Image 1 (cartoon, rainbow, N blue to C red):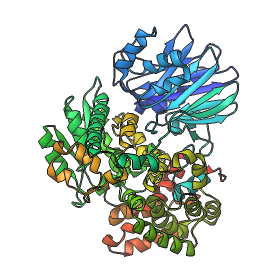
Image 2 (spheres, rainbow, N blue to C red; image 1 turned 180 degrees about the horizontal axis):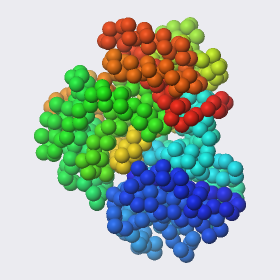
Image 3 (tube, helix red, strand yellow; image 1 turned 30 degrees about the vertical axis):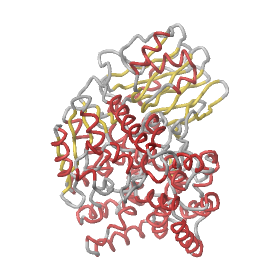
Image 4 (tube, rainbow, N blue to C red; image 1 turned 45 degrees about the vertical axis):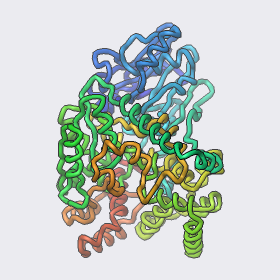
Length: 633
């Protein structure tokens, strides 16, 4: 995990000083070294701040190849790099360093843009091709690593963080249409909350040269059609056992490749199946140390289970106890680091989790995110699985759709229902838990923007080939992965980066996905057991209490249940942060907070997301001095 910054212009005039301010902003991501390179013609400049995890004594960036006049800066990790280095040497393209990043440079020199097919990992990189006078930048398949870009004054800017782009002189303005899309569904995969600042979507690359700036897709999730699933379902009884073996082997390989580092390795460990399976596999390959967040709220505290799991696996476990005061003190810093809104308190918990890992001397860690997306573990996905398999469930759902339509379903939900014939459960839940309750708090100007926004139709139009002919579960999983996942769950990357910690995610391995995706629907849940494939594949590695435990997401205690935290929010909302917030009406917000404070603490949780959204948008407005910008889709 490092920081990268790049600027390209078709005119001359760039120098190392052009990225000096951005480099300073990116320093927390890469405290171990830095480097800047400017092309002789002044048309491109690349900067890099380094977190030295592989080949710490070498592999300084930018990496270059003098004969081709090519330079590269990379963030993240390229896995299986040792095998690829050998292959490159055998084909006449030997690497000169012992690190992983150089393989991207050498593969590009050999294969051009097709090099992306060979790269495996969590990465974002930018490469200047001096022969073609072209900037080539790419982001990993699942969007684990960020890559932001903007065009201004005839220049293209790209960076690992929005703050770095702002340091280059770009204005901080709200993209209100993007926030409206967030309330409806999620940020569009190519947008941010900042007007004019975009993302290279997951699985895509950007080209900038004489022909302008273009973005192209090199990979996409591709679930089997219902016909293909039916064919597998009718195979012999040994098909399931073979699939379990392949999943186990695929997970082991994904974990093993991510344990390769020249620094000590930490692991996130909760009380759940995903992190426990990941730690069990990692401990087979090298020495690891686990870290677990703990809360005073025993209903949400998984640390006792995690401690017993760590003891069974024979690995050290560090308990990180968080208090309401910790959340109050770090709320603003978390939102600033993440550059996006938080909807519950676990963003602060993640921020402090990484701070503790860093304070213990670790730069690299493994985490278990992705298991629920691969194996349909969330309750909403289980509902979509039922729709895929049960005519009765589909009939009940249609009754619910008719009721929703009678109450005036918004256009974005109608477009999904018209196109797919059903509504993904996570999208319906978002409507009732976030969008509908938000309406009473909105400023009239933003309410108009929201009314004119349809976040779903563009994604549906772009995804026809991946949605047509698929089961409802796979349609739901696909839309979730293309919208909510990279913008929120993987937004934790910025929180880890603030403390100089690189977190590796074995479940987001495209080879493992290629194996897991082939499971027939009947294998996802068996005998009432969710994530059956994963549990069965690693059952001998897990303690009984973890193996049999129900799915429970990682949730921190709700902010709204603590009077002290609510008082902090109330004070925050009495000042200019809320006054300048372009989304939420100050008087309506203060009424909500007063009502919450008058209620018993155990009756406030339903308003947690609303309060978090108000706080996050207010903090972003104040911290970045954001003014009102874009309102169009």
